[in-house]
Amino acid sequence: MKNESFWVIGSGTLSLDDSSTLALLYQPLIGTDSHGLYLFLSALVNADTYQSELFPKGFLMDALNIKEKNLNEAFGKLEAVGLLSTYQKDMIYMYRLTMPLTPKQFFLDGILGSFLKSEIGESNFNLLFKRFSIPEVSREGYENITKSFDQVYQVKTLDSVSTSMHIVSRKPGAGVVINQDFKLDQLFEILPVRLQKKRIFTKKIQTQIASIMYVYGFTLEDMKQVLVEAYDEDHSALFYERINLVSSRYHEKHNGNESIEIDLKGQSEDRPKLSDFSPQDLISHYAPKMTNSAFALQTIRQFVERNAVDVGVINAVIIICLRIKTDLPNLNYLEKVLHSLVEKGITTEADAYEYIMKEPEYKKDKNPQYTKEKRVAPVPEWMDEFKALLESGD
Image (cartoon, rainbow, N blue to C red; front, side, top):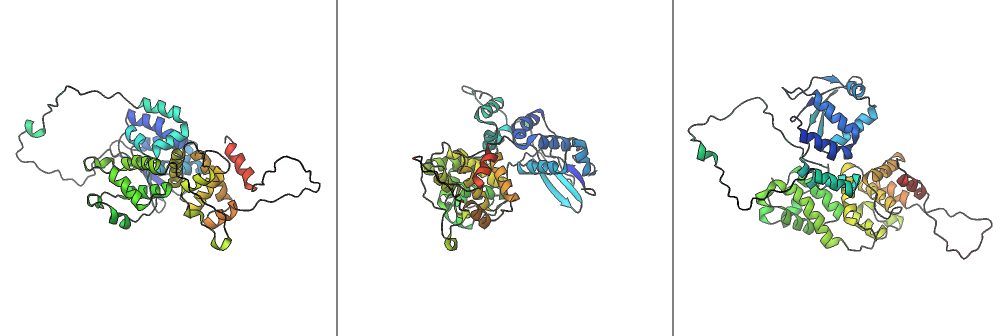
């Protein structure tokens, strides 16, 4: 970091509403370090040019009184929730700040809204929702008599606006985007004609579809039904938000109570792959009595989108947690378990399978005591380690 430098590009000026959204909605997800970093970078931007000067990278650590590891984590969280994009050229970093979503966009976002609820609890979530909600004003009995432009002005000749300068435009963030490839060809073949428009399926929509199909285990036909219901030509700007809402509702309606029998044990030469199982397969097998599987699937979606690791390792984390907890733990705990696995060098599907399926050791008692008490089958050694991790308040 010694010879590295950076500069910042802004996307607009934070309003009081933006500051409230950052503090009350984003900050519980990204933490105080990331929140402070975003505000600090915003303050470096010149109000006239929406750009900052060039600064040494170490300036951030000194000014924020933060260690390099924590600074990198803070940057990562800002990038993950769509508040910042990072570009690099040699030893120079360019940080492009993105305006926060509006409260409505935030709550409608299938990932951010659910993530916030999982982090702060439903009661606190409802308090914040109420904070950003206002009663709808009734227009009953009123007639819209607003004049249009051509009713007021006589248009003669208008010169088009042409400039080589960048015109400032307040552009809100796009929410969470994951880096996952998705092929549209097969899906396009079964979509109705009105949806066979590639301009509709932006990269953001494609990654969203990929994560939804993985988490919910949707077939192409399932996804088709979701997209048909979600797309409204008159409100196409809400397509992303509607896909999230419709997919969750579709899953609850069609798969909420479905029981899937699976057996992860198998012979080594033809063993099943962890990456072949969907999250609901694992929930059905390891936690059939889970009280809120729909919420657990939302948490898993967030987990997948935040961590670019092998799907087999992701599923291993889910199995470990569900063998210890009745309900799936929150996102922080899932990432704790993942971090612990990665530290052990478990980064592939094969490593993860071997680790979680390791047979427990039977301890032989030299002087066995025969009692009427029911014997409990031994469990793998890792159970105690992860049980302590999940029950800790760290």
